[in-house]
Every structure is written in C-alpha cells, then in structure tokens.
Image 1 (cartoon, helix red, strand yellow):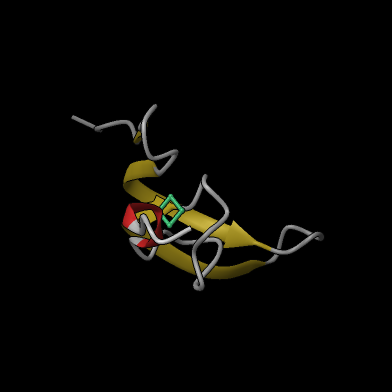
Image 2 (image 1 turned 30 degrees about the vertical axis):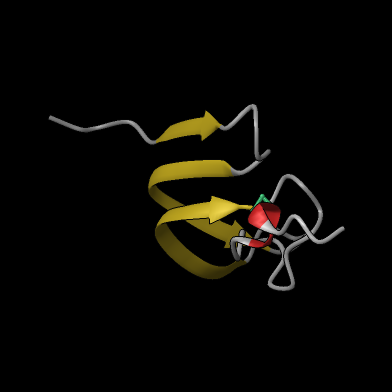
Amino acid sequence: MTTRPQIFINPKSGSIRFTGEANFVDADGNILETRSDFKLCGCGKSKEKPFCDGSHKDKSE
Ligand code: FES
C-alpha cells in the first residue's frame, strides 16, 4: 500500500508540515534534493527559508 504525502497548514503559526517524501527541483525540473517529513515556513520569520526553524514562536517583535 502506498501512503500519499500529507500537508498540514497550521492556522496559528503559518507553518506547513509535509509528511512523506518530496523532490525539491529547480526551474527546469532538475532534482536538487529529496527530503521527507519537513516543515516549511509560512510566517516569513525563518532564517532557514524555505524551512521552518521555529522562529514563528518568537514573541519579541
Ligand atoms: S512558520 Fe516557523 S519560522 Fe516561519
């Protein structure tokens, strides 16, 4: 049985959790990297974009 990747968008933090495996590609479709089970930044505060580094929890701003 194949399990489809799943995406959960946290409505509070804006983080986007991806469960499964995905290829990151360039504009020509060449695979740059393959990752599984990661979080993307949706809040714009991460210093490791496109990935979430937990900066959305920072209340100092
Ligand atoms: S969503 Fe986590 S740092 Fe942006």
